[in-house]
Length: 391
Image 1 (spheres, rainbow, N blue to C red):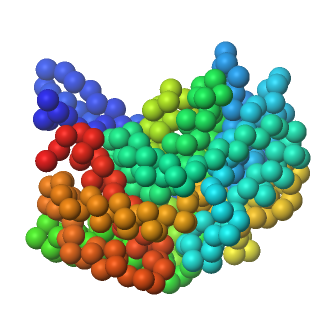
Image 2: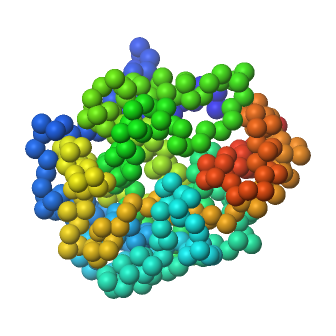
């Protein structure tokens, strides 16, 4: 029944008439040039305040996702200033998170909970800790795979799904989130790394690709490197490569990340609102040049200046850390993949070289972050196939 159905890409319209279908693009995020006059911190803070105020148009009480990072705390702080009653705040709390080895993680660099508690205390917000018991992790994985029709791609989707469930259980249906700030305000660490920016391949290597079957795609890294060079020419200047990488992040990664968050919220009837995706604020962010956005070798430098006085200082200067994921899942992943691979679905075996995964299941050393991610994605493909009745 879905034959011929296509996805309409973000920022595009489809027009149908007697001549057929015409696709046109009505919006493109532009990255600022060093020749542009970047907005000042006050101008940026003012625009963000208006963006948060616009997202608060609602006839039901609002909630905020509060990780204790810069972006979510900024949204929560401005929400308390512009809304008559303080919003409820939610943060994920994994068992043993204070004992995780964050030095082994590329994107989750510290425990969120102390920062979330500090932010809630400073802003006078009631903080709900969303617990995710280890005993329920296997069931969480199946639920996440059933919810995301684009196939779950990252372990943090368990956090998103859990938070959405908790918000609904509290009887709330609108959640303000800090998504899109990293992508539009130079928030990725590797934008400060000349080695990473020397080639799209260098960035792709950091994300641990799945072992795709060679008869499906001979060299996945080479293929995606070639595709990504449409945004990111290795022979260009460092400035051009930074701008190109940012455009790639906004056009190819951000839509998927927003989809992931939205799909898990909507699974429980919760509407996620994204102030950092406000059109006025995006226009302003598009004037921020890399030199200003990464000033002093600090990611989101201009946004951090705009946050001065709006969030607690330890949070304003906190190093970027992604939404948390449970790092104590390795043994569960190995056991679940071993069980499911006894009768793997064709959706997996038609594309993935399963033999390359088998050594991970018996390896006694601690798995690397991206090796664990391979097992997670294997589980997601398998659960997805079983949920939808695919062979």
